[in-house]
Amino acid sequence: MKAYLGPMYLALAAAIWGGLYVVSKFTLDTIPPMTLLFIRYLMASVVMWLICLYYQVPLQLKQYRGLLIQIGFIGYFLSIAAQFIGTKLTSAHMGSLITTLSPLFLSIFAIFLLKEKMSRNQVFSMFLAIIGIFVIVGIPGANGGYSDQGLGIIVLLIAALTWGYYSVISRKASRYYSPIQITTIGIWLATIITFPTIFFEMNQWHYQDLFTVPVILSTLYIGVISTALAYFSWNKGLQLTPAHQAGLFFFLQPVVGSLFGWIFLKEQLSVTFFLGSIFILIGVYLTMKTEKHSSISKETKTETA
Figure 1 (cartoon, rainbow, N blue to C red):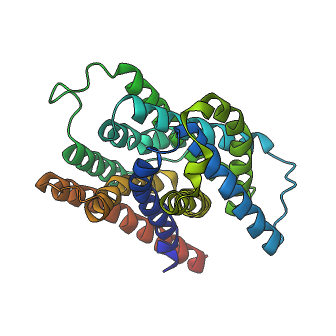
Figure 2: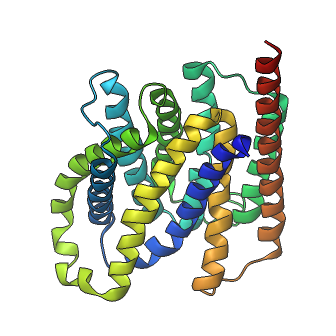
Figure 3: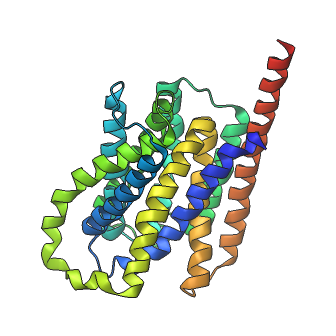
């Protein structure tokens, strides 16, 4: 059971973020992207502060503060802002495809920054998951629809690149800080950095729009569930799982997002969705099997020693 704890945290985060695509699709029709990002982090900041206060978690962090600053700026602000803007410049279809390349960048950074080697099984699992993504959302340019979206594609690639980098430095920071400390400080920094951007969108919405039941429920999900809970789960999973294996769980997002879209938005699911999902799930299963085998081997060595 202990071997599956990290994957369970990672799968929970990925499932929550999969639902975020459906919720944000509705909310962004009312609230501009950077304003929604600020509201998201503001709500999560309050929740994380209350949790730290209740459990008396120390937040006066003196060592390796550069890692935490990078997590807040690169992971929580730059990556998510690029994802929002890139999706707006292209499409949700293109956004879901390119941002799921994050595990590739995660593995590359893990090799150079964490010195983690990638096994053949992990390479094969990654390959299966990538095939699954392309089966589900298609190949860019196959229908001639993406030729004029170059800027948006570049921005989305930045989002994927920075998310991969954030995940690696978050795993590195977990050597010195707990997941709740990493999550709280990162969200606080992102809230401060995002605040000035809302003034550029003040004429695009009205504050009265916040006080409708659908928007209130949506922002609560975005701020509390998909930010405070999901980021904590992802950081906790990264602490317990090697980076190469952790990245595979990111591929669960489009699967869950598509299922939620089918349930709540009445979107149709094609045969390619189920075929691609099978590839992704096999890849995730193989990496979980590798994690379990690795944990058993370590326990055996410890007992022998």
